[in-house]
Each structure stands twice: as structure tokens, then as C-alpha cells.
Image (cartoon, rainbow, N blue to C red; front, side, top):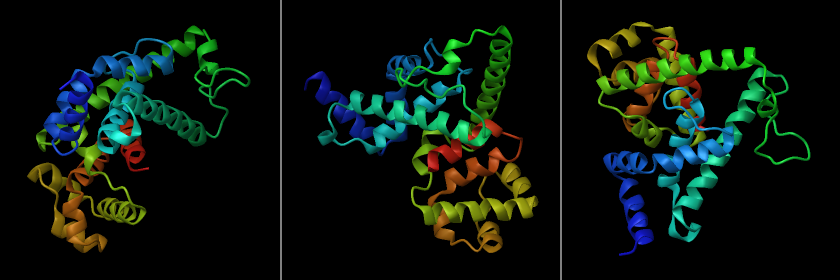
Length: 238
């Protein structure tokens, strides 16, 4: 079996095996970093640049969605990473309701942004603080997920893909916000209180069980002000 066929086989195995998926992501972190660097115009810093986290999640999504008739896997993953990056910056622009510094310059390469042309030290200091905060938040959230035996890749795999299911998960979150004791039960028991959530949200227990890992992540994201993580979770389900 040649290298290309071996990679295809590993991708297929990773689609149903979270451990295999995590191993594949670790092996291709160099590729993921390189794709991130193409977009942000510098080498990404582990634990600081949220773009690297987005690229990792996009790589995992590529694993889940890849079929051999879509061409070489790495080319497919590269397109997926780039599309997610563009989507991320567009959402940032929409959320801020201002002209985004990440918006492409007119009549220039789509990957070149206004931010790349600015060299204001104050901007760099502010960006450094944001990256540090993002790193701390992601590391803490990853640690807390680990207490539930859940990884980031499993959350990505478990997130709702259909509008109706996403709406049900949003109802669950809304119910939990109205009944804060649910968060306490979650943190103390390390289990999703399915019966209580089903009763208070009117959501079918089967739906809760099917998306248990995603819902645990969503609820955890609201226990300690994980603003960046919340954005990632909504990004996954969009």
C-alpha cells in the first residue's frame, strides 16, 4: 500500500474512531500549522492563536466529510481550513458591526488583510493580551472537558448538523439558564442530567443522549465565562 492509499485508509478509520482521529491530527499538526500560517501570514503559536484551534477543528471536519471522489485528502483538508478561516473572520466582522481589519483589501489577494498592513505597537500589545487570554481559556476548558472523559474532537463529532436538532440543543441551554441548579448537578456528578433537562426543556431524551457530549461542552462553556469557547461551539454547529 503506498503512502496516499495508507492516508486514505487512516482517514476512513478516523471517521469512526476518536483515538485514531486524534492520532491523525497529531501527526499532521505540521500541515495544520502551515495552512494556518498561510492565512495569518506568520507562524501560529500553540495555545495562543485561536486560528490554530479553528484549523484543527476544520481538519477534523475534513476527516469526517472526506470521500475519495473528492480528490487528495490533504488538498480537501486545505480547502476546508481556508473556508473555515474566511468564515471565522466574516463572523467576527458581522458580530462587531464595524469594518473588519481582517477583511481582504480590494483588488488584492483574498488572503491579504488590512490587519497585515498595520504595524501599530498598541495593536500588537492588545492582540498579544487576547491571545494569552484565549490560550488560558482553551487550556482550562480542555482540562474541564477531560474530567468528563471528553476530547475536543469528540465534541466536534457530536455537534448537531441539522437545524431542528440545533434548535433542540438551544432549548436545552435556555432551560439550564432558567434553572442554574442544573449546572451544579453537572459539575458535581460529571454527568449530563438528562431526565431533568428533558423535563424542563421539553426535549426528547433520545436527542439529549445522542448529543450528550456536545451538550456537556455547551453547558460547561456557560459555567465560567468561556466566551471564546462558546464561539467555537456555535461555529462547529453552523
